[in-house]
Amino acid sequence: MCVILLSLHVSSKYPFVLAANRDEYYRRPSATAQFWSDCPDLLGGRDLEAGGTWLGINRTGQFAAITNHFDPASTDIAPRSRGEIVSTFLQSDKTVDQFAEQLRRSDNQYNGYGLLFGDFSTLYYHSNKTALTTTLCCGIHALSNSLINSPWPRVQAGRLKLQQAVEKDQDLLLEHLFDILIDQQSSSVSSHGKNQSSTHFRHPANAPMFIRTKDYGTRSSTVILVDHELNVVFEERTYGDNHEDNQVRRQFGFQVHSDSQNEISPNAAHE
Image 1 (spheres, rainbow, N blue to C red):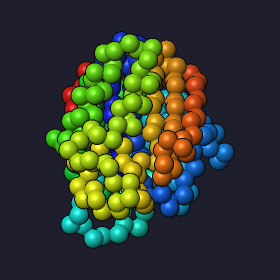
Image 2 (cartoon, helix red, strand yellow):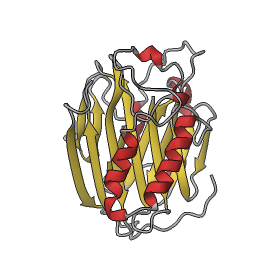
Image 3 (spheres, rainbow, N blue to C red):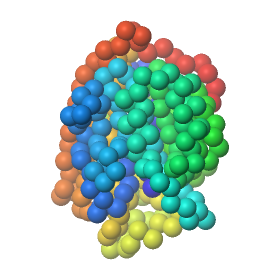
């Protein structure tokens, strides 16, 4: 279970706004966000079991993030880790069309996923459940463990809260977004079950924004803000099984260096 909330060209100060939670088993090892030693322009956390990442950006203004697609009927175990899709894109020099074609050719090598990728001006969505790649229009979007903007309580609540946040004082937007991400009462399922197992959340549509059980939960929250001059603020907060006591914060700031992007222009394409 994961959730990604995205605002494109809605905030007057930040045309690109992202708030995301990564939910994972506590036993799965991962590294906190950093610029990778083997790819110095790539910023993101790292899955130490398979080597990829769930969310990342790079200094040339590319972004990618992935979620699993919830399908309880599927028993297939695909040979490749979905996290490698994100890190591959952020290290690739392929055009969007070339990368989308690469995705379609390799879709059956991964378990179900939803992928956001592109740059801070134009983002694309791809799912191997549909094999389609679409351009996201300006507005508020959310991706959890189904298709993008699905009518799940978790997704609908997140979109509404993000819309309200980007209409508030933009100087306080960072904290408003983290308040959304740590909300344990944002859907129809109570999260009073720290001592419950992960099977308590049998369907992620009804999960709260922030999940905490005895073996599984929200491992990290990430907020990315990008202004019109392509100044980036990237903050990650990581948690253990008790998020109040084990929180670690890491913040990065830089300006995108790209000859092809001088400013963020609104995208008029339709989803």
